[in-house]
Length: 298
Image (cartoon, rainbow, N blue to C red):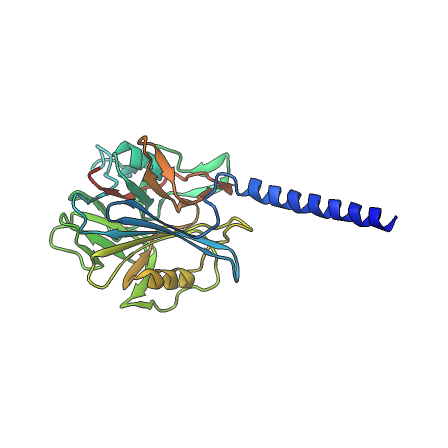
């Protein structure tokens, strides 16, 4: 009788284990596996997946890019054809749409934008194609289509300037601007975390940084708002992560539901490298204003 009871308890215990494991696998279906990974994506581009389990689950996706790679070119989302006379210069699109439309190999979301709201799956803005304006200065191939300061704006966002020859400089505008994207705030200055970084709010994050001589570019996207998978990062977490991978200077880009990292698949279709979340739906991409893309001449 006792052996039968022990056997039944063992069976129930095994069933519970399999149910828990099955539920966890189902919950993580179609998301990047929560295991560390390092992989060469293209010549001059390495992808790392960094996984933290404590003090809370966090998954970060890191691209380490050699800007001296032959054939490498940067590309920022261009303005619409009628941008000079339109109220808002650019139509919203997802990072995947941006990558596919312009035949790029890598794409991420860039600056925040207006107008924007996200009340319910039936009440949000923008939809794909809706007109928006980046929050800070934005330029694509010599066209400056959003200014650094607009009426009602209280501060100037930090900006990354990218020259035709792939020189990357933060916050020091050249005489002639070629490509530029702005962000939320500086995260890393001279290899140290910037002052007064928020260390409380957890969110999905996107950030970009360079090493001291500007040759190496670091792009980081942290997944968030997904319990038991990845809860997100604070700005302080993000700064330390960038320093750990080699950044000397770095800024945060738009985060939250905008955070997306995409690469071109073998058949030319976009492959999402992270687990974006928009309208609290895992895997859903948010249409955003501008992006940073990388063309590798493949």
